Length: 589
Image 1 (tube, rainbow, N blue to C red):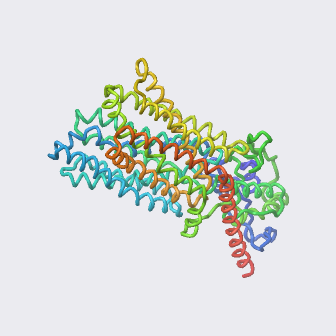
Image 2 (cartoon, helix red, strand yellow):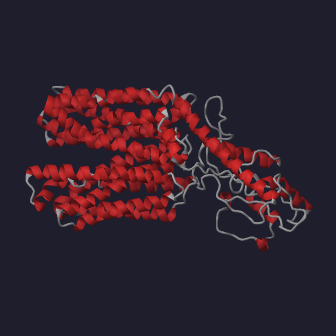
Image 3 (cartoon, rainbow, N blue to C red):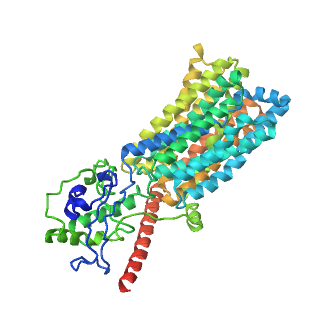
């Protein structure tokens, strides 16, 4: 790739150049030829090249530092959003006393109705926001508005006076929690290539779980002293501030910029530009050299025999030798060589948009159907553990509340370890030859094995000295049960074109919420029918069923990933054909 400053110096006199403050390694320069010049080169379709210096952000438009800054902000914001999900639980009795509720009213109105309202509003909000995330709307702005709409009422919880005011603001808070996940993964899919998405998914997965835990700890610590309302204020204010900072400081990533098909097309344009030929010109705007492209791909799709990616030429900025001034024949020759790539028909930009036909197509993709199907049985055990496990260890197994809490805490620690390790190891497996199919085996086997420690700590009559086997089984169970979430979300990103990801993650969130919300109610029904021990064993068996469903990904996940990239290529070809036809029509007139 040519030195951009050197190219600018050769094409434009110093006194005519304008500095827009953008780092030169993040802009794309195009030859400038006077519009009235008879020597101005003509592109094949008969139009003249651009008569201005075009500085367009290449690739995703972000350096690695900017990408991880964005992920950090998204992770912190997501953690604070999920912190308010169960804020009332530690102070339920305090709130019930203030509203004058009986024990039964406390369980029904504060424990049941509020949670129901939270998900009833959050569920359709997720679908609407997921659909909007796939439209040509700035997603950073949509994210800020979603947080504001949801966390504003959460903030207002501090001033409620009646139960129905509390009911209303808790229902509206579901908008933020339901709508954030589709936006988070839609953004991250356009920030990182498939070779890195499981890493990022592990951060966001941890953020949601850590946020819930942080909220409960904060409410349990602050609520008894300062009242049950203050935790809502402490959770909502940082979430709104962080979303505002993200909107003010983060650039909207170009949709589809990290797709293999788009990067391959961009590489074709770059090679044609180097050769000065009239190879396939990308479409849509102005050509980019993508010198700062940070993907570990040289020519997209080409790998070393050992499966490892090698650093592309785009990371090496070759210096262009000093050349003659902009008015010299040599400069005009350079402009002529690049003329086919300096018009508005040469920048590879993906312009796919969601519509009902595409949505119907994606809902028929087998990988999507499997991922949606595994969600319900996979989340029921989590709902059971969160709602009943401590009390089960205390009442049925004779442990103290503190010992039961320690067991649940270790299960949560194992979940963090499993999420991080699963994201890292899973991504490496996915990147290896044949890894797309093997990651399905990893997810299925680890999820199914996660039920075995559950069967142990639910059915064992004793846990050894100091309950050591209980704590060990909880830690191991948490690790095994948490390998899948970051990897299944990365696969969901990879089997869907960029313009459908927000909507597909909205459907994924629906299933997840149904499992988390209806799981405890389903287990409660089993308890009435069979008793606690059998009911909890049935719930843990959900991981066996989930693992079996995930194994069904093995035969076709690789093909579905390729089909997603083929859909991207078809979109690029259609846009290019439409633009070439329009440009040819302009040339004739």
